[in-house]
Image (cartoon, rainbow, N blue to C red; front, side):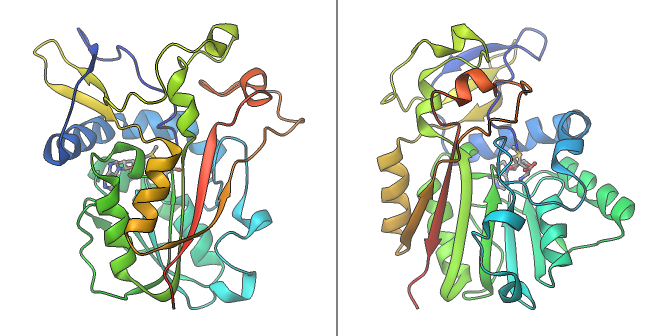
Length: 279
Ligand SMILES: C[S@@+](CC[C@H](N)C(=O)[O-])C[C@H]1O[C@@H](n2cnc3c(N)ncnc32)[C@H](O)[C@@H]1O
């Protein structure tokens, strides 16, 4: 869950470019990045995420407490798709609630971490390697779909993902996804005072791209304004029931990457869209 921390200059000779990138290039860069980063990501965030826990965001909103997907009983037997599942801790938590869950991710490296976590926790869910832009499932296959910072911030055409999720949901099904709050785009990823100064336009949609010494993209993040995200949801035929902007909890005093009590007290870091396919 950390699209939130742009990995500036991790690759030898890497540089940041701001340039347009289509679907194929974005998928290729994401697959390469997440395959290479899977082990480090799990080492850095695995403890926070847990092996079978559903944490929506760095503000530590837990599905167990907020029930954005539905009341406890409603998960029993529900067919759920986790999009961009990474190590699939959310999927395993849902399985523990009695749901029938499939975890989907574009990165085999991340899915290997899911398999390792399944062995550790004793909870196994089916895993599928595919891009969220073309879901390999029949229409109406799922009652619920969810994503905690998976796929959506990394795709060139998030409207495609919204359309695909709407297609695979049954009428009346629910789709809840968390992304970094669009206003974070304006600031650098510095958790300290320097991260309080606006450095780029909220309206600048040019993707953030890391390139290697040969200019090949190694990491990409795509920006959407809040209005863009709402339009992507609505134009897919979905209804937006709520937009949750979790507040930074007072008791959370640690800094975690770009996430800090200082910034958290002043502006949101996460946006969670709670959507529904009309029944
Ligand atoms: C920040 S991680 C989030 C993983 C997990 N949800 C968590 O909370 O740790 C983003 C995940 O999205 C996946 N991803 C990126 N682009 C994708 C795409 N186009 N389709 C499916 N998954 C994608 C990555 O492979 C990665 O596992």
